[in-house]
Amino acid sequence: MANKSKKATDPSASSRPAGAPQPTATSERRYTIQDYRLEKPCFTLKQVQEGDRVLYRCEGDLSGPPPPLRDSQFLSPAELIEIYRWMLLNRRMEMALENLYKQGMVVGGVYFGLGQEACSCASAYALEDDDWIGPMIRNQGALLVRGFAARDIMMQYMAKASSPTQGRDASSHMGDHLRRNVVAPISTLGDLIPVLSGVALGARLQGRNVAAMTYIGDGGQSTGVTYEGINFAAVETLGLVLIVENNLWGYSTPADMQFRVQDLAERAIGYGIPGVIVDGTDACQVYDAAHEACARARRGQGPTLIEAKMMRMKGHAIHDAAAYVPEPLLEYWRKRDPILRLERYLLGRRWLTEEENERLIADVERQLEVDRDFAVAAPMPEPESAAGGVYCEGCHEVKPRYGVPQMSVTKSVLTTALRQVVVERK
Image: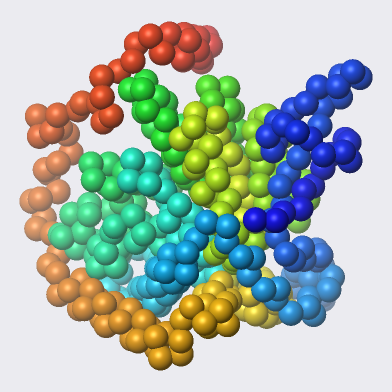
């Protein structure tokens, strides 16, 4: 895959890996941020006052058409069609959840990934069976790719007895560490990053390098635990694959009012790890960047930070109408709908005919209808069931996933961890 690089300090190309420091005679360091985008939007959001109203105004050129998708270096036509199907299912499932919410069948709120399906589905598709993932609230497409059914997610939101948490929790707080290697989302933003770093560490102690993928938004990446988790993974060369979903809004605060760096991938420089920028609405770019990052993790070469740029096309949650978003900005990103872009790409390459596409869409709709009917008909949990499953009472055996712990490999890691505990207790 051809790519352009964003360089700091020295314009010359570096022979070292992307993001790695290269000392010079003057003690300067050179860093390279790989930028795979074919389009680099140039606009800013500013807070202005009109009469007694405070609102955001978008300044910049929003007139250009969307670029073509970048050809994938790794995906076959059949694999790309499969990703397209996951994205469609992701979109249609969330539309069904919105309707269920309006019918009073959802317990709590609903968090949408509208406009972010390419990021969720294509990144998860890059994982192998032994790899791990910790999705966030907008990554329900990743759950589908990892083997959860749409009915599982809908029942979870409706707190049904047959849901993955048996009705004990709603929203997307669901995982499966036994079969699917999925760590449940954590509401405290950023906390999944040290958790997935710990998963990679656990595999390392058993003699296995795996990719441990998780996500954080442009707002959540400002948290201290984000820094701690990435830094630990960097220092210990763990296989963390962190996807920063820069969807332009931290709830109702635009990215331009959250941080001063132009690209969040630049923060990889401070950790001494590779930083990559992709168009989050281009499934090919997302997959290729994730594929390379996961392969690097499995080789034992440490973490990668991938910034996926896109637009959150709904409010923070279903209760948020997102009236603060300027209409020209919404229209700009509607033209860059990741599903429509991939559909046109597949049709244009003749990898998918119009008839095949219609059958694929109809099949997704049939599957979703069956799953929705199943979820609606599923019973609510019995009140007395709330008392069970709170503590482990010998119900399962905790044992190494990949083999016997490699104690000879763990000495420096354990020493570092013990020192950290001592520092925190002081």
